[in-house]
Image (tube, rainbow, N blue to C red; front, side):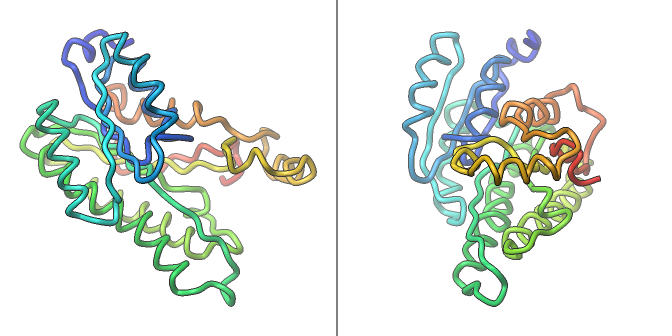
Length: 251
């Protein structure tokens, strides 16, 4: 645990933090003494149980509902977080969706919804939080991209476009915000063990493993470990970077 950060009562804001990678990220920061703000849009059951556990260890936790595609809702929850904690030190833009389909079968609604949530949502939340980071002249932003945003993938042109957009967005704001001592980096996970991959057949999993030099999927914890590093002062001279967490699948 970073005792100096614990004394300073640092605060992390995680979007889509109620399950999967987001929940693991929140847990990692909580273990290191950060106070936690979690944004969710539909279900907070999993993280409610963790809230009691964290608060028993002295970690203050705020769980707020907001659709990241709606600026008014985002502004409201960010303001509530600031009112409670006075600042946001780290922002993790994790909220995202998929609507997979082949190009010729993909509807405009499937394309627009993914771009709106994954890319525009990242913009909306970052803009809302950065306003307060700039006043403090400090902060770290970690955006969730994907190896699909780096290399593309058949059947995911909408998701690939959104995650490639997150990379360009991250590099641009890293240049804009560096003078205010605000860093921005992107993490690009590959195949990660989640509820979605758990339902795949053994044959499909074997096919996936064969694409990965390390011959296995990654864990949400392994992604969270990198996100924590990029959010903390341990990475104080790193900004504008995209780091894959994919077992070597994309090099």
